[in-house]
Amino acid sequence: MKKFLALVMALILCALPLCSCSNSANYTEFTILEENFGDELYAIGFRQGDVALMLKVQEILEEMYTDGTAAEISTKWFGSDKLLRDQAFPNDSEAAADDTSLQYILDKGTFILGLDPAFPPMGYTDETSGDLVGFDIDLAAEVCARLGVELVLQPIDWGAKEMELANKNIDCIWNGFSVNDERIAALTLSKPYLANAQIIMVPEGSTIKTKADLAGKTIGLQAGSSAYEAVTADEISAQIGKIEEYADNLSAFMDLQTGRIDAFVVDRVVGEYMLTNAD
Image 1 (spheres, helix red, strand yellow):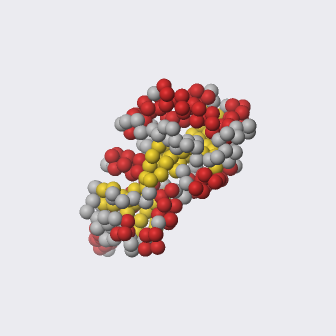
Image 2 (image 1 turned 90 degrees about the vertical axis):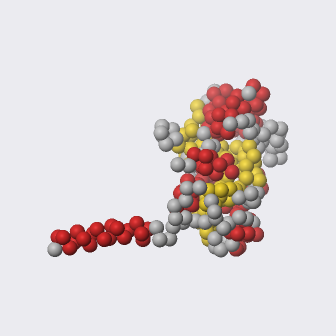
Image 3 (image 1 turned 60 degrees about the vertical axis):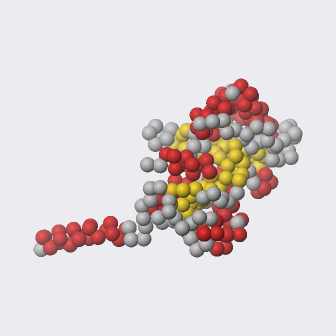
């Protein structure tokens, strides 16, 4: 009887890999389509009306552009100076700097930055050290050093980022935060500092070559992200088979690797970083 049970268990264990892989494949090579869901710009998001704080952070960033510090940080993460300069403020309120937002930060001595801890290379958790690192974090750390306050990094649910800001759980959203009309209306934004696009990533050899080929397919993206907004605003949205929303981009990328989704829509800077650093 024991031998019979052992044989049954062995057969079950042998069958499991076949069952688990019957609806998926493991891909190791990926490509980014030439066509995307639109170009965009990154800026820092502050509470609506926190103009004095925004202007002070912008002033320090301008100093960092001039003395070369910002370019050094960009080169560290991107290999070259990709920072934008001389961009216009998205909001019309930049001149109304008579609020107490800057004094609020100086009085409490901390500047709390809200971020998605899985958004490389802008801000993410380093697998080796467990520390939060990234391009935006390095920029913010230098700004805080010059402002004379402590930088506090606060991971948040990206889908609730505006609520976290409104409730003063964080002082800014600085983590690859895209400029769009909704955010311009609801927040005070810094000048855009980095260019981005919402790209489409697919496995090498995929039949998906253009946005039109997404018809009937399953795509993955991060919930509450600019990728979601860009996809759902596009005319192809009605033809997409299914949009899978994930808590973070890494989870979506992993499902692309295993074949659970057909395509992955993500910020260009993040997608390119993932491809460069994929195992």
